[in-house]
Amino acid sequence: MEYKELAEVYEALENTTKGLEKTKILAAFLDKIRSEPQVIYLLQGRIFADFDSRDLGISHQLVIRAISRACGVEDKEVVKYFKEKGELGKVAEKLIKEKKTQTALFSKKLKVSMVISNLRKISEIEGQGSVDLKVGLVVDLLHSGTPKEAKYIIRTVLGDLKVGVGNGILRDAIVEIVFAPKDLEEKKKYSVKVQEAYDKSTDFAEVFSKALSKTLESIKLTPGKPVKVMLFPKAKNVEDAFRIVGRPAAFEYKYDGFRVMINKNRFGSIKIFTRRLEEVTKQFPEIIDYVQENVKGETFILDSEAVGFDSKTGEYTDFQAVSQRIRRKHGIEVMMKTLPIEVAVFDIIYLDGKSLINTSFRERRKILEKIITPRDKKIVLAKQIITGDAKVVEKFYAEALADGQEGLMGKNLEAPYKPGARIGHAVKLKPEDKDFDLVITGAEWGTGKRTGWLTSFDVSCRGDSGELLDVGKVSTGLKELEGADLSYNEITKRLKKLEISEEGRKIKVRPKIVITVQYQDIQKSVNYSSGYALRFPRIIRLREDRSVEDIATVSEIRDEIGI
Ligand code: AMP
Image (cartoon, rainbow, N blue to C red; front, side, top):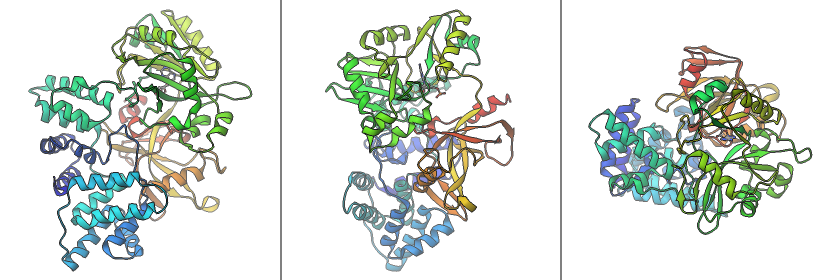
C-alpha cells in the first residue's frame, strides 16, 4: 500500500472531532488493509503492538537535524519555522514543499512497508554512530515523501500524531467493518468480544486479523506477554463495598506500592510488567529470585503490588519512595539495598497452561495459597479476611492504615478476573482523599531563583471519548532539591524530552507524565476545556507506573462535586 493513502486517512481523521465520524473513516480504511493488519500500528501512531515497549529514541533535536538535512537548509531555519508553526510536522511539510517545487525532484512512491521498516530499524540502532544512522533513515523517508506525507512521518517519529485515534474508536471500527452489527445490541456484544480479545493480547493487529478470520476466541493469555490489568472502582464506605461486591466478601490490605504482573513462561523465564505494559524485569532482579524460590508452577501470571519498606525499621514506605526504581537501569544492586521491596501477591490469572480468568476469586486465592510459600519482606500473599460483618471490616481497615497502607480492597468471592475492565468485581476503600491522577500537557519556565526550570504545569483529564481536557495549572508540590524524584530539575529534564512546541515561556509536551494532584476544591470554570478547575492544586506524586489511559475522567471529576 502507498503511504499516500494512509496520509489521506490521517488528514480526514484530523479534520473531524466527532467520534462516530472517525469510526467510519477508520472502518473504511481497515477494509483496505485486511491483508496488511500491521498498518494498524501506524494508525495508532506506533510501529509496534501496544505490549511492545521499544521506542524510537529520537529527540526533537534529531528531528530538526533530519528536516534540515532532507531539505538542504540550516538547522537555524528549521528552528525559526518551528517557532512560527509550533510543530515540527508542519515545518517539514512546508520545507519539503519548497524544496520539491524548486528542484522538481521526482520521488518514487513511498510505501507503507518502507515507513514501517525504516522506523523499526531506528528502534534497533544502538551504540556509536547511531545518531547519524537514525537521522539518515528519517531523511530517506522525507526524501521519498510528499509534503503531506512528510508531516505525518515527522509526527509519527515524535510519537504525536494528533489525529485522535484512541483504543475505543479503533475497537468500534473493527466491530463495524468485521461484524457489521445490525442493531445496538449486536454492536455491544461484538464490542465486548473485541475488547476482551484486545485486553488479553494488547495487539490491535492481531485482534483485527483474528476478528477477520472469526477466530477471536483463539486469542489466549500467554505468559511472557503483558495483559491489561483489572481495575477497581471506589466504594464510599464499608456498607457501599458490601453492596457492590456482595456479602460476605474478601477484604484485603490495599498496599501502597505499584502494580506488577509477574509472568513465568514455558521456558522458565520470568518477566515483570507494569500496568502500562512496560517491562521492568531488569529493574527488579530480587523479584525474580523471590518468585523462583517461593512460587511453584511451570507457567503462571501473578497480579501483585510491589511495596517499599524501610530497610532499618522494616516499616512500609509510600509509593513515591520506591517509584524511582521503575525507571532506573543503573546502580540496581545499590537500589535493592536502599529501596527494598516486598511483593504482595493478590491474584493469579494463569497457571500451568490454563487460563484462570473465569475461575472464581475464591478459587484463585486458594490456588495462590497452594503455590506460594510466603516469606516476610520478600514475597507474601495480600493480607486477607473473609467476612460479612461490617464491624470486623472496620477494624481491619484501621489496622491497614496503621500499617502504613492506603486502605482496603473489597472483593467479590465468586467473580472472574476481567482484564482491562473497571467493573465492580472488587472495590477500593480509602479514607477521603481529594486527588486525581492527571497528565501534564504543557509547562512554563520559571523566573527568579527558579530560572532554568519548568515550574508550572498544565494538567488534563480524559473526556468521555478519550480526548484530553484541561483542568488547570499546578505549580506547588515540587522540591528544589536536586536529585529528589519530585524535583523541578527532574521533571524539567523529562518534560524537555517530550516537548512538541514552544511559545514564549511556555511549552507543550506529549501527554506522557502522569502525576497525582491533590486539591481542596473543584469549581466550574469556563477557562478550561473540561469545564472544571481544581482549586489549590498540589503535586503529590509522580506516577511512573501509569499512562495517559489511567488518568481521571471528566465524569469522575463531575461525580466528585455531585453534578
Ligand atoms: P488505585 O490506584 O487507587 O486505582 O487503586 C487500585 C490499585 O491498588 C491497583 O491497581 C493495585 O496496584 C493496588 N492494590 C494494592 N493492594 C491491592 C490488592 N490487595 N488487590 C488489588 N489491588 C491492590
